[in-house]
Amino acid sequence: MVPGDDTRRIALVDLLDRVLGGGVVITGEITLSLADVDMVRISLRTLIASVSALVPDPVGPEPADD
Amino acid sequence: MTADDGVWLYSITTDSIGDAQLAGVTGVAGEPVRAVASAGLVAVVGTVSLSEFGQEPLQRNLEDLDWLAATARAHDAVVAAVLRHGPTVPLRLATLYLDDDRVRLLLDERQEEFGATLRRVTGRSEWGVKAYGDAKALAQNVKEEPSATGTAGKGTAYLLRRRAELSAQQDVERRAAGHADEIHSALRGHAVDGVRRQVTDPVLTGKRAWMIFNGTYLVDNSRVDDFAALVSALDTERPGITLDLTGPWPPYSFAGIDG
Image (cartoon, rainbow over all chains, first blue to last red; front, side, top):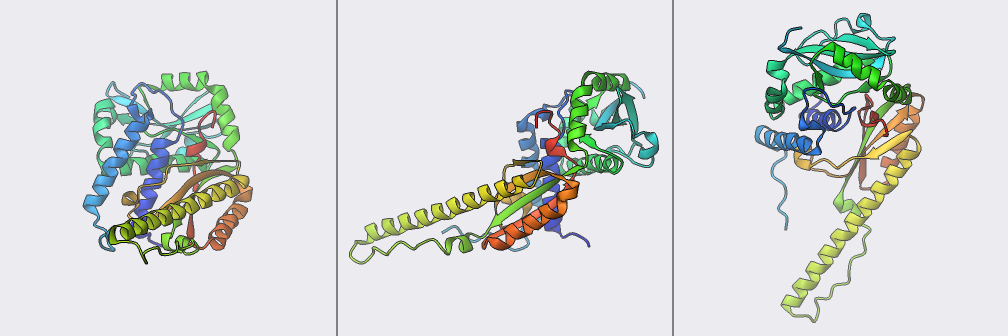
């Protein structure tokens, strides 16, 4: 089965959530501020921006918030 | 290895895993991964170029979604490959050392912690459960406030209606939160451990559904069928709530020493 775009995107978010937010944190010699939650947020913000820009909502705009 | 190379760490496992089991597995730079052993433990590592994975290029590359996605998938693929041969404690993405000696030193220094974590995750895997709410279905049983528009003026009627709407909205959110709590506690009862994660921004998932709950659980492999059955049951017995199960994952969320 080939997963649809939605599935793939969700899988990517799930994966990033785990590899950036989980795993053992060891201070390596090349240390990113990745241990920081902030860094994860920055990466996820990048993801939001990129995903929104690259993949237009296939079902159309959100209903108006009336 | 040259001065321009670094050592990327994927995961820690037991010394029953060596280069033989890792043959053919490639890492984030397409490099063959290998075992660095000390203190009865093995660190699964790969040699990568610091021109791509050194501190500054790494910071830059992490902001590039395609690079980040490919790197995260490659990292996870190695961790998953190790997991097929034995328990594994995944390292957070982008943990790099300058040479193998320092990796061995790390294994020596943290032998006890890694050993304890490896024992904890042996025979277990991580499963993610997300719940989505259908606001309309959840609102259905909320009692409608009696309409008070009969005698009130236009402005008052608007305010009353607005207040009723807000209160209905709060009721739906309260219900969703109640479902989330109950779902977590039911799943937690069937797992070795469990944590609630932040719900994912709908913009990220591209799903229009309203995520009300995002949890992840460490489950005995022998009890996975029960766990999956419980997820189905929770889904079925709660109108307006849809559950979604993902896994098995390497134990990313349970690799913490205190976790």
